[in-house]
Length: 197
Image (spheres, rainbow, N blue to C red):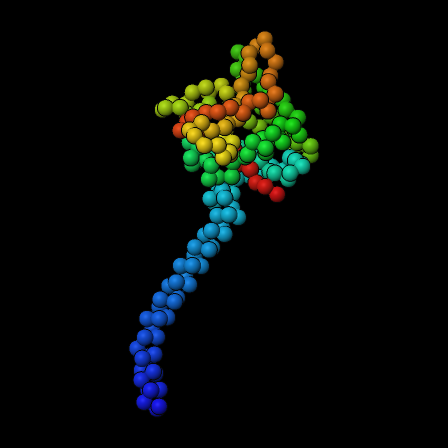
């Protein structure tokens, strides 16, 4: 029996380092994956949150909207829907809440082009939506209009986006709620972010 203990101890000494290495490597990899998953679920903005200022408008849902479009340096960032959907972009319901709850004012220039929309929340805080245009094939087009992607689950290559523009000098502004339209998902539109309560 004493000989079995000696053999077992010898075996353990020879293999303990390999077993410990494998165990620690597995624990490390599992912890890394779990931490990454938890971080991604908690903060789906990919580190942008540190650079993004959110405005509390006093909305019933508690949703906060980014004070400006997402920026790439000093310029607005334009992304196709496939890249935008992984960010914390607003849903159609969040957009409709913004339209229904806030007071909207629109600035039009002398040639009746859209300059910006401003919305004032119930608590008096404001957001501005400047004209942005969209990038279709290579250049920015419709620069006198404003766009940004809306998150949705719809299949296919057409995805929803908010589209703001002036309907014409002889027409009144449309209700912004009606300005959710389909655009080709490969077009590059600017990004507005939201943060839920």
